[in-house]
Length: 382
Image (cartoon, rainbow, N blue to C red):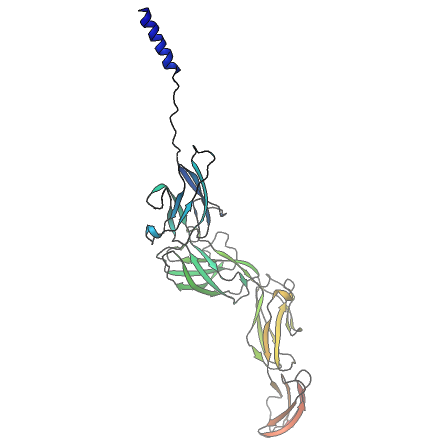
């Protein structure tokens, strides 16, 4: 009995001395994504076409494949990225940290599949990213009348109508206040398989100097705030337009100014550097209208521009005006025997001119250095 008891004790001691082998722990794969493009009010798994998204996580093998779901394409045609992982020790899982750019795709949730093989069905994990609509423009600044092209990305796949809104004042989240914006364009569009559209243009309306927001709404994505539609800013520059491109000496020309500072004062119109109108004040939208008479000038093209208290000469694009020959008759009515006097302007400088009345020569003169002449008189005969 003593021998058996000693044997039992020895066996127990031996069993206690046998080391307990550690059970291998398989790495628990886990991937996450975050939109690294900075936005306020959006979650990390939502944004816009063109955003940079970082996908990171661990997995037991390398490489992995990342597939981005497109609604209207077969899985074999989805864009993908083959990514190699990194690790410090051979018994550790591979670490992945990959930046991808959200490709052109329709509005809504899209799967981003992390796969262990080049097959979108061999998933390690499926993440989701929500795409919202946005617009881009081909001009970032300009004066009123500038033509701007608009392109859309991330719109609903059945969107068919677009309205372009130009905000005259900062909407400050009150996007539906019709007093704040002007509808500058509407169009029937055809959204492609990737939620994109193009070919919509508009002209910048008269508005105050500075940055203005431009947004688009559609028949499906019709709420800027609720649909998280991303707009763009457009810088309005001061500019002028003339109601006529040419005219003669003494002719009245109407000038419209826009893009000036709100209620800007001391605005003046210059013709070839000569003041032809002064003391103009813009309204609260930076707009104004004034007239001037074509001054004495030889035939040819001349620059017309405007300046103000807040708008310097270099801030505004000059407009070309062509001076053409013109005559001034005084008086413009009377009876037979009334003495008529003819003067003229806009003729070539230092050239001889002849005045005829009903085919009969009544006098001649030589124009001065500014293309003008005066002093030819005769009596009306009928």
